[in-house]
Length: 404
Ligand SMILES: [Zn+2]
Image (tube, rainbow, N blue to C red; front, side, top):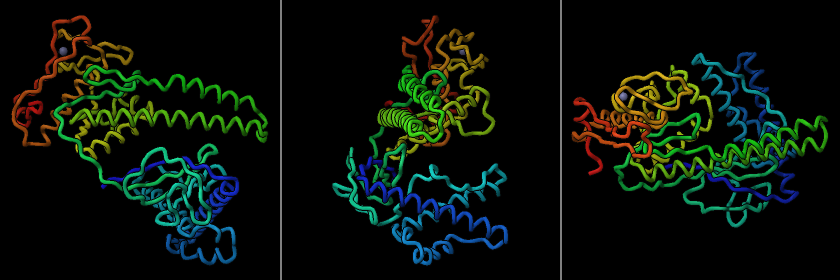
């Protein structure tokens, strides 16, 4: 069984909007009060548990009609959320990592509440306990079983995020394999020679800058005009984020459908070299993309192999010599005669390492070399060079010709 989140836009009417906002306010107040209690308890060394806090809710409801007006599981979930933040903080402290103490949430820093089990029903409208029947745009079919519902506010719009449990569909076996180099220039380069550009990026950036300038020009902090400009900026940010996510979803789905084995660099390992480190911090988009790829591959029964990124952009995929080059050098030129685009060379190194790693970890493969001729268009200069990745004698016993 797998889990995924399905997000639909909500169109609440005015009174529903007021109730949604009121719910957020109550949850935020409860969160902050719960945090305050924990801080005081910590000072006098009598820790509070989440159950203790939940057990106080009936008392609070008795004297606060606005709190009583919120579905009780939503209130409980707010306190559980605080508990999670708190536990995560202590876990980091205990591991000796840098950790920020959980913070009080300001008016614009608390944007969602959760129905953990019940209190909602989805038909043509979304029925929410204590809030009403909300108009919802279901832009795709929902498959699987709904587990939880989180209602969130983003840039003035409301959304319903359903966490759904579903049975993933396994894809038929594929003997195709591919190496992916995540790049600083292009979004990714594939070992079949495909270069995937950051197309959404440029136009979106221009739009963002315009929205940012508008906010900067409205200097009166309390003005309605500034408030509107900020909303526009938030919308622009959301638009970029949505575009990016959409693009990454499409790409990862496509890769998983077409390739049985996918090799990527492991950007989460310690002691990365400068070039790899730049990749790792360049764009948080990378980690979300690789995560998407990981869970989709797992659900479909494909293999995602993460390899050590050391020298992937320096090593020659043909003779394995290390040719050190600066980041600005975009071509890999080796004494063995191979001249090839830098990123493209890296994809072969990544794929080669991935296949070797896969062979090592799955001993049942029969011995056969893996040949991977370069597509002709990508050779620059040395036209008579054919790149063939051959596994060494020790590596062979574990490799089966999957193309056969
Ligand atoms: Zn070489």
